[in-house]
Length: 151
Image 1 (cartoon, helix red, strand yellow):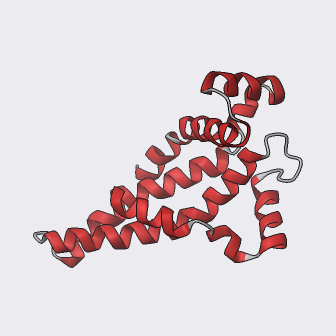
Image 2 (cartoon, rainbow, N blue to C red; image 1 turned 30 degrees about the horizontal axis):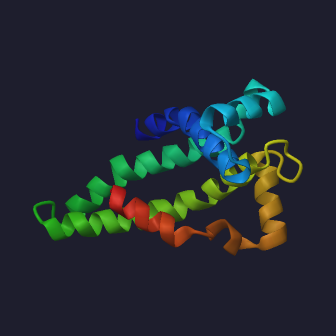
């Protein structure tokens, strides 16, 4: 249920994050950015990175709705310290699991016409080949901190 719920949030997250990444690269309002994306890549261009977006959201929701409550019970559900420890552990675990997927998605969305990054698998291979494993975890600390606060 948590995986499906997360995956269902993938399409809106995909469009919103693609818009944000394109605005960061080229500027412009949200409406102008959406128009430029559609003019450049067609309507399907709005969904570039949908696979990794949905996968990331599915894993995040599973962690949020499944892992964190289980850890609270394991630690001692009546304690505020247990809740904080479960949030910290869940956030770090989910960040570790989802950050490489988010990196692939972001690279794809920044390269709207797929000149460097093609499919999800091609993007992952390209990142691995040119930058190694560490590249999948660039920005991990900030994402992990944010996710710990979410849990």
